[in-house]
Image (spheres, rainbow, N blue to C red):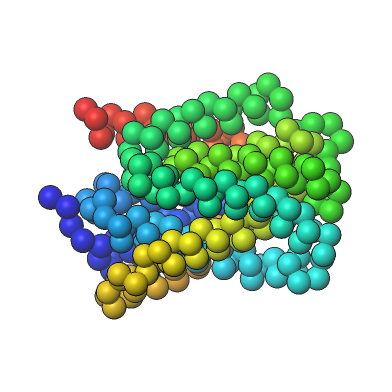
Amino acid sequence: MFSQVTIFSAAILGVIEGLTEFLPVSSTGHLILASRLLGLPDSEFVKSFEVVIQLGAIMAVAILYWRQFLVNRRVLARVLVAFGPTALIGLLVYPLVKQYLLGSVTVTLAALFIGGLLLIFYEKKIGEKENPLNSIEDLSFRQAVYIGLAQAVAIVPGVSRSAATIVGGLALGLSRRAIVEFSFLLAVPTMAAAVGLDLLKTSGGFTTEEYGLLVIGLVTSFAVAWLAVKTFLAYIQKHDFVVFGAYRLVLSLILAIAFFS
């Protein structure tokens, strides 16, 4: 029997979103799977909740990196160029994704598993290139477009926006730190647009109680993401992304047994 979203489940989902939004493990996938484990219904509000609370994590990055957006025009230009392909593809296919894929446990688990394999394979066989680009400013506009196209693949739940941009950036010759920071920055217009589009289409049907639950999710994800961003940057200074690939494999297999056995 499905239960409705409560203050407790809203806070739990906010913590999960804040922890996973910028890691290459798929925050959307985690939210979908956590919602099912919490017994939440596959309703329009729950689907919108899983999208909208990502704005809390994005706000944390926007504040931490405000100088990049307001002062460094070279970085801002590359973020906007990369955002273009994602925006176009997302606008065209997002309604279909929300209707048929968002909320699908099968799609999410499959994407988590395949993405985990790809992360491990890439790091073990290719990894960071010699003499990588260490500055976002050195990224060409063509490379920015390619990263935007890579990010667009993450419209499929479970793929991970962060993982797609990280692998795309590493393939183009960016250092791990540079592509992680670029992924942070690119998340701001990308997720702001996704949240805005969803709210535009669905917010009129929310109740006062549901708006309150959204606020709880937003505040929680903001606070947790603030800490997670700094921790992730410190981690990738000395480590690669293999551990995240392994985590995706283990999680998808365990939950596949739990859901389908």
